[in-house]
Image (cartoon, rainbow, N blue to C red; front, side, top):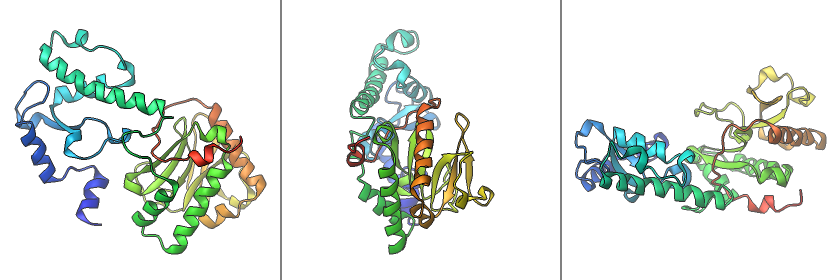
Length: 285
């Protein structure tokens, strides 16, 4: 893995870019002008998860306090709300104005995303073909693995009811290491089957089934990666690409049933999609 890739994967800002950001803001907090270097933090103006880029124009220098305030008041809770009343006894008018400007950029990005079907707007979403290419490259797949990956992704997207797929978050994660499809933060499909914290996968993908109706040919589940859900009676199972492509109609119907169960389960979080699946959501439900 080259140095550039390691920086991206670990979320590290390159030393030369870090130096340029400190220079741009004269080694002071952009909001309050605090200048103790140990307390200064580099902050994405628009989060990467919203499609924000890693270029210098999307970074600002903030002290620890203003960094915390920027994150807190950029949350959904304060969407379209004024912050001056909360901070007027702590920050001057000019500082509040600068902080408010940062917050508005995040809120505007969130608003555009929600109006765009919960999908990236600042950057063009990945196509399914781009997802296949990026995952294959990052995982050093052979031509055969790449072909199987493409077939499995397309099969899963076609098997999911369009009405459910439209509600899902489809994301390419860790700079292209894997793809996940979540509904209300419940994982329905992931390939390759990395763990949530990037643990090395033992299986090609994770697929979801009702835990009391797991296909017989996928048992015993103790031999697989298995993840149980807290809010509905389904389970993620680790499968190979070959196993996934051999599933019959009845077994795919169980996957569809699990998706429907997730649709009715308790919502825990919304993720923003960065993959364009429009061609699959236009199909008849």
